Image (cartoon, rainbow, N blue to C red; front, top):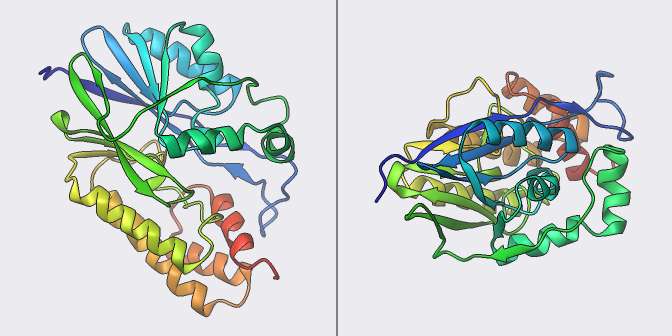
Length: 284
């Protein structure tokens, strides 16, 4: 056992989206900050969720290099491209790095990287900014993998802000890298929730996270100034229960959006909320 495992975070800044229109107040629609976690031992490291653009990946690569550790593995918590496109250039920069993900995540990664989907979404929203290429993924299951003899364990969470999401648990140090199961000070991405049933599934995933009793919990999207403590599980739960209640009482996307903003005014990136509101109320 290695008691010296540690972690540190790199949180990207919000960046502007293209081709999706402004928010109701006329402001530019932004992309949420993205959290990458570096878990380090004496000499080696595992990177969880590299970000999406070429520039972001270069900055994370510099940060990893400055750690003085050898990057051996990358783990991807779920299939959304903003949590793994950066692995494409990072594997070129750090040869021999193994990219690991569960079977469900691997399938969704491939879907996100299909030429038609990329052209329709990623390359339209971030023209010229997303790395191109394929990533060879080593599929892992709940038995996990190791960093310098210490177990790191994927935890299946099911549907949260997309299907087949996972968390990475390092029980020896009380660390749970929660991916998008938990959001910390950032508006949740509800676009794929499909309504109350999807929200209920997400609430069940939060119960899984809570049952692990982590001392530290890292959200896939977080306010860089926020603390990484377990209270974010309940904060995410409260946001989801508010959304479920307002889905039943709101008549339009804008009414839902404004009601959620009133309840959660300090969260970053209302653009994520506006996108969810439009998906949940498509006829308004």
